[in-house]
Amino acid sequence: MNLSSLALFDNIAKHPWSNRRFAEYYRWYPKQITFQNSDSIQLNDSCIEGIYIHIPYCQNICRFCPFNRKVQNDDEISIYVRQLCKELALYHDQGIRGEIKFIYFGGGTPSVLDISQIDLIVNQINSLFGIKNGAEVSLEAHPTHVSNPSIQAWKKVGINRISTGIQSFSQTRLESLGATHNSSDSWNAVTALCENIDNSGIDLLYRCEGQSLLEWENELETFCKLGKIPHISLYSLYLPDDSRLPDENTNLKMAILANQILHSNHYEHYASCATGGFDFAKNGRKCVYEERHWGVPQAPYLAVGAGAIGYVDQHITINLHGLGNYLSKLEQNKLPLLSHTPVSLNEEKRRFFVLGVKNISIDLDAYNARFNAQALDDFDAEINMLVDLNLALVNDQTFQLTDIGRFYIDQISEIFWSKDESLIPHPETDEMTRLENRLMRA
Image (tube, rainbow, N blue to C red; front, side, top):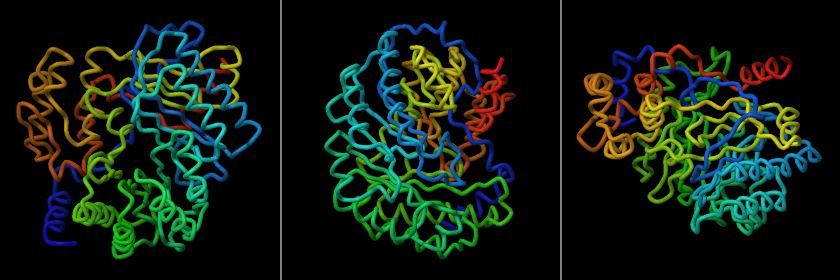
């Protein structure tokens, strides 16, 4: 670490908020769950900018994945894809429209789908809504699925961005993580990406058991030497029992070191999903999905698939997580919604900042235009507090996180929660599944 990075570490470690730097991880706002009988849900005619598609199937389950997933079943996948296409049609029948600017296949492991299944989904979207020329169409892929032939096949059915979670280049580290691929798979995947597609990204994990600062530095330098992968996402590993993981000081040093190395190699830190998650991209290669569903004003987007979370018709939509429940609803020609929560004007204003800070900078003129109000008036106390704490810089047009603020994403976001929302815990996938099961039995 250079002198400026050491100074940054010192400033963060001594910050008044240092003892609460890691808070609950949240994926949507407002957090409130509003259980719905999907028979009665009626959507207003509404425009969307994009579509998130959740494919929950994986060949094997990684212990560090917090998302809705299950072991692959090829017969069930065929049924799932057909029903997912029906879900898209049901939204279209309810008046949802829009020329699509981004599509994101997430999971799970979307690359378990065969080419014809991806093609079916993309064609369904295009026929119902229309895909804008130049739209970003992203696919998350397991490293073992990424090869020269697979990339060429994906490109032919409209995929133009591929992201793969190699997690590490080290065989020792992958074994300690319990990853479902090895170091050769990591290398083969990144080589194929470099040779076949100009818009790609990888994920790396840090704060892993036994991982030293020097080992993490070597991982980052190895990535930078590749030179041809324009996007990288870094995630601090969190497990229910983290007693064997590096301590918080080492965790922070790893995050600062990553910022230092990637910045010096012309990668911009443009987004953070959470305090321990960092997204970097070279110029022109930011992920549109991440920019638009967090960035201000947040794009309305449809979310389809089991457990998918969207924002449409000024409602937070959360789909049923259980595959049986999800498929059963669609067989009845009903939207497979677990929760359909309206976003009030007050919460929409707060959402503007709660999610907007994930993209590091917020255009205040966009707030003023959207709400016919001044953000600096509506959130005077919150913004002044963050400025006083050296977490944000503000002028008439922009709210910008400082170099220190970039390491406090979750806590900065919390400042903008409403009083009611501050009392609501953010349910994770397992808890959502339990709530759903109780609801379905009632």
